[in-house]
Length: 137
Length: 188
Image (cartoon, rainbow over all chains, first blue to last red; front, side, top):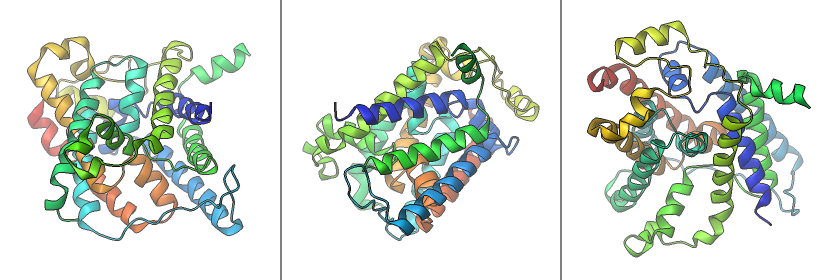
């Protein structure tokens, strides 16, 4: 039962990304061709309002439902891992049209070939783990 | 009630989705967690026993169950949207994109994803398997290398004004533009 709240937020996430067509391969192509405002509007609005929430959390020391201070862990400073990792991610995003959330949501919608994309992503994650020590971070 | 169902069954405009995603991020923080999907892939590797092969996957995955539950919920949300909140409206993809994709032999079908890549016949094509598994591989490898994906970097990270996340998103676009404009014409 203690996980029910995460399930509920997840359901809302799945409905939102489906109904706003963020899970659409066509929408991702439109974005990478700069031919529509749709995806930029979604990401821009989410980041803008999200930044306001984060500001309020920090300014007023908001706590989570258990009364613990909300802490947002800063990301470790580096360039190569974010740049190279990001480029590899972007190549896959534009090809499969799905980042990790939409991969799973698309299976729920009924796009079962997306299970191949998920399998690939699991193998990719595993291979990263094997190669991690040899990659510049 | 029917009026509400009819309304949310239409495609959602960008500003509604943007507000909802920010609220989802806030909800996860208020629930004592963070909004990031790709770490689930690492957790799944760990559950499958990858920790016996590599220390990167040796951690107590039971602490990550909440995130697996979240992504399971997202799958259920996708099913709800397609079964019960579906007004059968074709995505309004721009004419320019339609023309560009038609030149690659990929056509709109009134649905979210092209038949060329996600129709049932793709499973009987070797090329289809390579594209789908290869695309997924790059996403999984890249997300873990960069320490996050769209939710963790583009949304949560930039909302927290993290320079690393900005670098990651620049990378997402360098990769995405390269694939879209240079590689897709070679692949299709």
